[in-house]
Image (cartoon, rainbow, N blue to C red; front, side):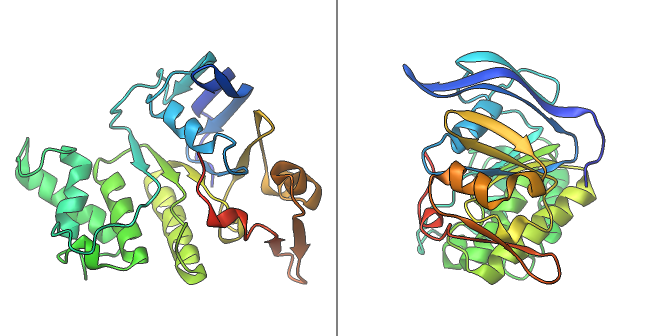
Amino acid sequence: MAGSITPAIVAEGVAAAYGDQLIWRNASFTVNTGEFVAVLGPNGSGKSTLLRLLLGLQPPAAGNLLVLGEHPHRGNPEIGYVPQRRNIDRDLPVRGRDFVHLGIDGNRWGVALGNTAGNHRRVNQAITSVEAQAYAGRPIGRLSGGEQQRLLLAQALAGRPQMLLLDEPLASLDLRNQIVIAELVAELARANGLTVLLIAHDINPLLPIVDRVLYVAHGGLAIGKPAEVITTEQLSRLYDAPIEVLQDSHGHMFVVGLEAESAHHDA
């Protein structure tokens, strides 16, 4: 799945903090271009903070961080971001298509900028790529959670980024939709050569598709192949809770014990 050895992210001794409170430190790792990386960790460990650093929304408290060859900065068009999904008001009159268009024009409601025809094509391509054509003309508040998640992905893709940062895109979805969305992200990443970091509580829907796992816990970060990280011992220590990793006769891994964790959002 990894497209090349050129690093998309390089972290050297990076630390993150809220004010004077250190969250994690001494993070040194690379993510290669085209890799699909799942970000795991208990609540409050600083997973979403990692995305904030990559987006340039807050500076590292220490160390050096490069994203796509540059120091992180706000509004980088090369990065598509899907935040934690909140409940969208059912009466919100915004059509799915207009919602996706915000991925190009930001928050400039009703203002046509640049090549309007070109932007229209980009919106159509993004909607088609997530197979949301059937409902893109409907108010987004009236759509199901899975349909809304597809349009959030389309919005992130409309800017034609090189990297996708996804903060718990599988939360609040049933298992079937979790698997569908996870596989969709993987297909989009392969088709477009995207680097993906996806925060998740439940690794099960992601096990068949991720290249590596980045875990955040105990004030630090570490990265490894799923077989190295997804073990009973590692996850039990990571979550400070009894977690069991089981394997069926076909070699498929299943993680048991994260149900309580997955009911909460990260800080």
